[in-house]
Image (cartoon, rainbow, N blue to C red; front, side, top):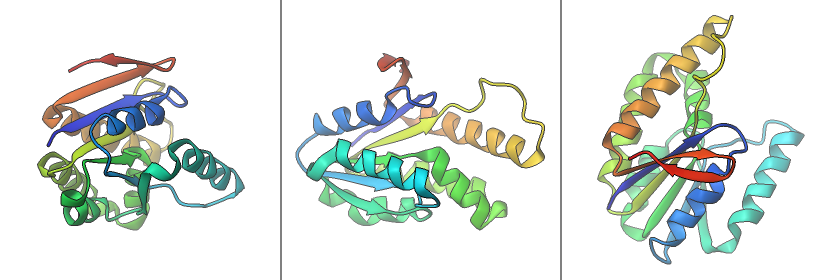
Amino acid sequence: MSLVLIGGGARSGKSRHALQVAKLSGSRLAFIATATESDDEMRHRISLHQEERGSEFTTFEEALAVASVIDTYGLHFDAIVVDCLTLWLSNQMFADRTGVPEQSRRLVNAAASSPARVILVTNEVGCGIVPDHALAREFRDLAGKLNQHAAEVAAEVYWMVFGIPLKVK
């Protein structure tokens, strides 16, 4: 159908806007959650996201194989929200740092070729200072490349500022 990329800073309204875009795409809605319940704070954040999307979405909790979920279930849904790319990237880096660029391309290509409208949520991590730790710099660089590739193939790109979506493409 079409790929939509929604990016911005932390707590900028990315997830809320992604849910709105998905709801305008049809009634068969899916949500791929990439977060893992690593501590009490993450469990609380996950709970808030679950409440926000409600029961309208079929949820897949998938920290790594997001492209496979999109490929397998794309025909069954009008829209699939992937929230979020940067958490997925972090999961990938800790699972297998050598294959991250290939996995990133695979995810974006699966999203772009899906019969469902896929809405990718991502954080912008390159606007701050240069990290002083090599792993953090690698993460920032890989996230920038992933976001650029997704934006290049996306039909629509939104930048969230203070809860307001600015259409970039």
